Length: 74
Image (tube, rainbow, N blue to C red; front, side, top):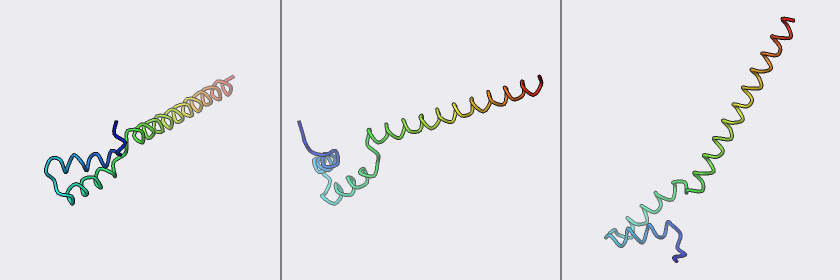
């Protein structure tokens, strides 16, 4: 099992297919700016959490307005 980081593995692959050191470094630097799977999953979970909170807040507001209307009509 390799203990190399994904960026070093990318660099090694680029070198293996005939890329120069500079090209491998440039490619590895470019790929380093992309989020990892874990970071992507965390961002996705945060987005769903925000949407869930907004939905719950909207439901509370709608129910509150409905109760206020019912109370006002009685």
